[in-house]
Amino acid sequence: MYKLYDGKHSFESLDTAKRYYPLLISSFEKWLAKYCVTDIVPAGELRSEALNCENIKIYGSLETNLIYAQAIIDFIAGMTDRFAVKLFNELISY
Image (cartoon, rainbow, N blue to C red; front, side, top):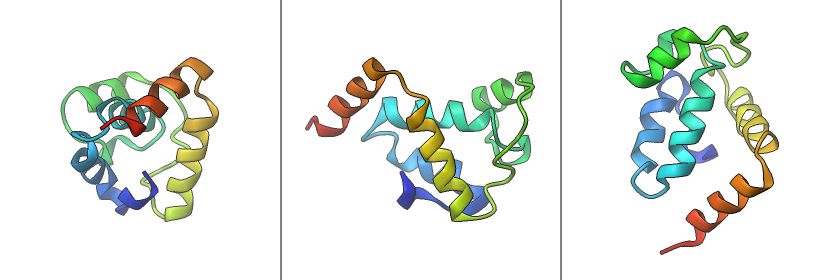
């Protein structure tokens, strides 16, 4: 996921990998949208979820790759074991 960093356009970059890892990417996008400023979240379902969420926007506009890396770390750290295994199986499937 780290290689998909593209500043404010990271959501669009993530979309390119969605066909290979649909569960991982869609889960990360939904989670990330809640913690980024709404301006960079693409229109549609993701934006409406982000607008309805009152979380503090701790990742801002993903200004640096370090902020994005921290978002990835936080996403992984918050996973349940069962969900992590499900994503692992998606990553290793052909």
